[in-house]
Image (tube, rainbow, N blue to C red; front, side, top):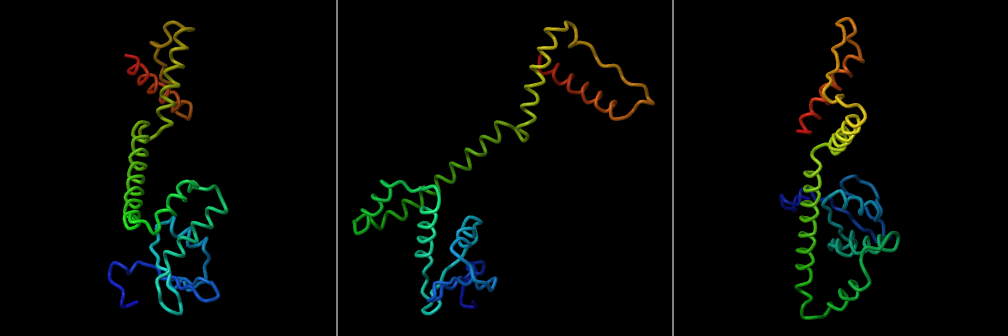
Length: 185
């Protein structure tokens, strides 16, 4: 692979033999279309070459993977989309379709990333902590309704010789109570 450029050094070369077997030259092992699909999902850059002619057949193999995925699982490509796509072959717009689809997929991924980030930001770093705070606020309100003055009572510090798990829990509860009091203001 000395003839490949520096940007292609990380590209895994897969050879397809006449018997339809795929050979991963990096791992020196035979693989299947399922392996290639997994590599694609993992972001591994690969190129499939015809073992006899050296022709790049990556496009054909990727199309085969899509066909396998569509026939084995939940279909992702709607029939109307496929019909429209087929009707574009031979059309004067055919050369524009690949660029449009790439741009659309890039925008989809960017929006997906933004949505994921916005969701994480809305919940904070720990979504369970937010829920716990809300639950504690509701618990405090309920306790105040049934035991007037309970929200102002501070837990007593345990004796020095009783510093065990119970003492740690009491300290933690006192800290939570202080935070809840601050939230209520």
